[in-house]
Length: 324
Ligand code: SAM
Image 1 (cartoon, rainbow, N blue to C red):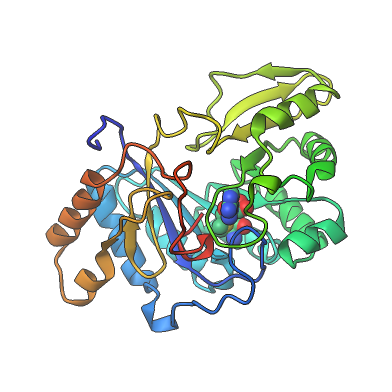
Image 2: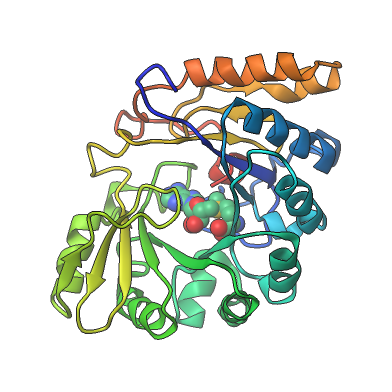
């Protein structure tokens, strides 16, 4: 439990700050702040921290990045984590670019669910936002469905003037394939031009836009995974759409259940707060499991009641270096 009575049992582990895309909202243009490879936690270090966290009561784990699949040993990390007593579920967030080849090995290693970022269906708009190739992502999504994951969800970051016109095509794609689509408000997680008031598209406005095409039926009791999305069923299309209103939902943090581990081994109790606790230094100076547990407990005690995104928050690390 954290100081505010929230049960924190979900750890998002970033396995790398590197990425094979360049999303407008995630890293500054020309970003050069990469960690050097030896600064990244090794697979053995990641698995050890997961074991200590599981001993403390963490049950749900997500591997993320950067782009986790640029790292070659993710299936081995998953396999080793599934063997840890107390680990109930391991999920992955990916941009999908390398998923076509890796979906089945990841599923075979024990990965249960996958979230794939998909900000647009139109190849040119997708490329403008991410620098990537949407046809590869769509192939990755199809491979994930074929590999039999328990759930494949789609994540789309909302940007006014950038991908509003893509929302309906995304809804139709999600409905056609029976995949939940989550629409995420832009968070101030890096310093780029796109992170302005002008580009901010609130969930409430998107609900009204979608309501012009279909009826939104609230699903207040639906919990898909461990995230903060509020789900609606679109009556005609059958699409399930989740809204992640980190900025406009004043109760967003009330049910927060997570902490993050960065690729360079810092525990971040909150995405929108600069507090970090250094596990890597301890690990590499011979700390035993008890000492690591204490550091995780320290991070838990430092978890703030809510994020600072509404208070002129200045990101010190871009999202790619934290882990989404
Ligand atoms: N590369 C992987 C992916 O694309 O899912 C994992 C890391 S990415 C940082 C995780 C999620 O964070 C993605 O869905 C991405 O769109 C989202 N994200 C990144 N920067 C964001 C921002 N400034 N505001 C809202 N969501 C953001």
